[in-house]
Image 1 (cartoon, one colour):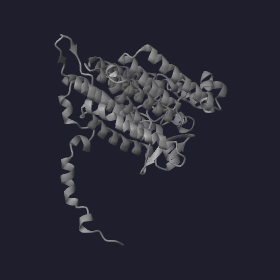
Image 2 (spheres, rainbow, N blue to C red; image 1 turned 180 degrees about the vertical axis):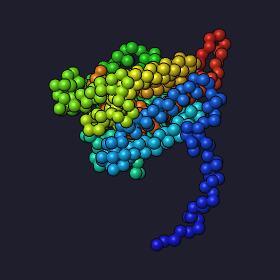
Image 3 (cartoon, helix red, strand yellow; image 1 turned 120 degrees about the vertical axis):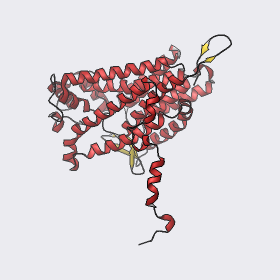
Image 4 (cartoon, rainbow, N blue to C red; image 1 turned 45 degrees about the horizontal axis):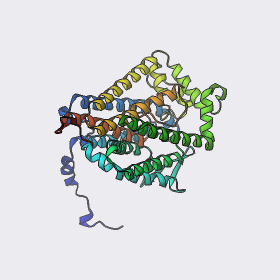
Length: 412
């Protein structure tokens, strides 16, 4: 057995000094002494995000315990993994809220290009990991990464940077941006992952509307996106079956409509007050993907109409606060970043709830900060951190006065 050289050995006596040099908000991500100096919007949004995460972890414990016990022998298997990813995500959250948005906006393109490379690598046979017929993951070391999730905050940042300067950038930069965005959406669509492609496309399109881009350009991109979606439906049989089964899931309750039927049964079983925490029956054997895409169905069964109403009210307040933060910003790029984050969090959550309740066709979109998945958790916390950062900079913004007497905000 080889012996370690003295220089290779770990000096345990230095570890206390190493940890003492780290800020407490990285060792204990929930704690942040600096938050007391923030404006009320940033503090409230931070606490609401932490509440969202905490309730999500509680629900994941309930929704995943039986399945984890049956498949792995450890009822806490999924819960423990999610807690680890949550701590990593909260560490990133605490870092992002401290980084000036100007730096994030100007550096996002490099990260976006790196994630695009990972997206392309998932399409290469032998490199991507296939789950349920879709190749959306790639192993980075021993860690599985779903590049389509962390690409969302980078897309928001880069779109805010480009759209915020739209009238002042040369045509070649606009063309490069459209080529880059199109390549990203195409790579996600080829996994295949139509729902995430549409979600990213909607985020970019709504941000473009908020930026005031011409309606002719918006119309052309909408037609292009609709054409790609139609092509994907034509080529992917399971996507067509999802749409058709949504129209009347009870006719195919034993086939393509099974997920939706079992989800609606779980929601209806909750009644007014619900069956109680941990008492869901549907999650035991009937409801598929109960700790991921359909976790809100478990929530509805256990907490009933009252619990669902409170959850929707929470989303409305969170979305209203995000809109207030966007409207309060004096910089267009900051407004756009806040709007993109609002759509990515509250918009995606609304779509997930619509799917679970049968109001929308079944998709593979997770419920942000609730559904199981490390990439989704880290990405959602990064997006929430962007909102908090915009709120913080709103309080610190300096308005530039020009000689002509008009008050104009900075472009980035």
